[in-house]
Image 1: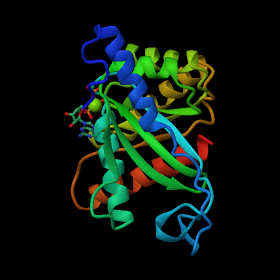
Image 2: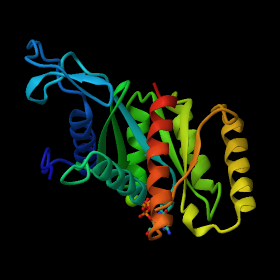
Image 3: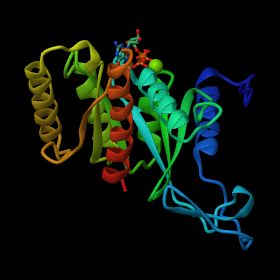
Length: 233
Ligand SMILES: Nc1nc2c(ncn2[C@@H]2O[C@H](COP(=O)(O)OP(=O)(O)OP(=O)(O)O)[C@@H](O)[C@H]2O)c(=O)[nH]1
Ligand SMILES: [Mg+2]
């Protein structure tokens, strides 16, 4: 996808890749044109021909967490939720270099949820980009892992304190007490790293099931999106 600096040493090439991803995530320049018509999408005014009526705020929210906790599956589930809710021809997901991005509109503007391809890209971008908040994925099957703490510390070092938590794989847990215990551990860990563990949203999500079960997790995806938009300004 990227051949910026293909002949350069690997470290320089990696840096060029991060810069390219940065450019792709950066909001487009505000448009000056006066809209012909105003429509509202999720409470956000939009001009004619799909153009924003005024510069729209973009909030980039990185998905953080160790390997295998279900970050990519979560983003795909959220994409599926938006596709069904908004009757879109396809989930609003797109590939940027080294990352998968979900675009969604909320009352505060446009949110871009970013799932990095590798832990390395995740930590490098966290260190290099000023994010307002992050979405931490914790598997309900594993609870808080050493990698979870690492991701949390990387976020804290990057100055992020607004961390929403997606408790993934909840469809695999039959015992509600077990879920309560995991949730308690997650909140304790957030508190330990000064991330408002008592008030931060911790939402149970699942990417499985059929019938009523699937509908329940479909609704949970919507609740998670709402919680992220309310918690990360
Ligand atoms: N049942 C169930 N399985 C899940 C869920 N989320 C993820 N999985 C499974 O967990 C495994 C890992 O999921 P991924 O989405 O690839 O995890 P990831 O965090 O993106 O992993 P990396 O990209 O390696 O960091 C896959 O086999 C998924 O099918 C879930 O909510 N429910
Ligand atoms: Mg992944």
